[in-house]
Image (cartoon, rainbow, N blue to C red; front, side, top):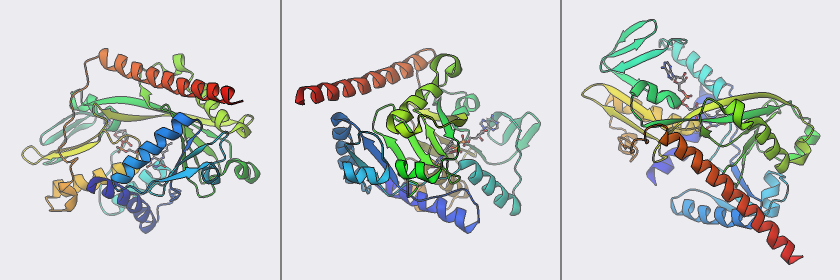
Length: 343
Ligand SMILES: Cc1cc2nc3c(=O)[nH]c(=O)nc-3n(C[C@H](O)[C@H](O)[C@H](O)COP(=O)(O)OP(=O)(O)OC[C@H]3O[C@@H](n4cnc5c(N)ncnc54)[C@H](O)[C@@H]3O)c2cc1C
């Protein structure tokens, strides 16, 4: 419960820091809405809300009309809402933060590939940096640096539409710049950018290096989007990219620091800037040796089992995604059959 409270606070912290440092990253504290479009999804959301409330999260169950106030998705039966979420542009945030720390004397070396991290030294393409403390925070690329099987690289495909006129936004909702998720297991996340585009991300899938050729992720995302919001059928997708993220075997992010060898690490942060922020502040306190309440949170030093060796790891991840897709289809067919029987 302490960790979840700290994560909720981290959302405020990110927005507060961006405001205090005058970083224009499109931060908007609009909350998160998950919409259910069949009975099985709604039941699952209600069960999840109950659990999250027991953990101290502010999650409210919405009826269809309340859910549609946030997102006018097709066929919405209900949903859940949590105020503890924000949207931002992570690239503008990270560039702004880099400017701030450099103005305070830090040195940032971009385009410098780290080959190896070891106690007291970081070996890069351009030479070796000697330092008493090293923080490894390489996201999806962690395994390449740690040489272990602690983190699996996944990738989530994103698209952005052309800027949409206000009359289209009036049909979509998103008035408070909410993050909107659909309640399928292989969900789509949708948000409004501060330049009026709709940005959508698909589920994280194993990075096979062949996403482009085999999966048609953009086509799938486009179909899911127009299914949710038919008004988008003729809207142009002007941008697409793949966002890499690292997943630990138990799905939980963690941080740690070994004072003897001076190595700190952040693993499995995934796709949440608030988690990344809390991880960064926690590691800062660990490395500085301050007795901050953050260093006593339960994710500090938490070890997960290693992933299975390849190709078992990727086969397992692909199988679990296929099982999710199948279960989503069963939910939909069951709802269609119930609707036909009720007619
Ligand atoms: C389009 C988009 C929108 C998003 N919107 C939101 C949002 O609204 N709210 C939110 O909370 N989150 C959002 N996110 C997620 C957010 O960007 C991530 O949570 C955050 O970037 C994770 O930070 P990280 O430092 O853990 O990992 P990363 O940002 O992945 O950083 C890891 C870094 O390590 C570097 N690296 C790895 N290996 C090496 C090496 N060998 N040598 C040198 N450098 C290396 C990489 O280049 C990278 O810069 C969004 C992400 C995307 C893509």
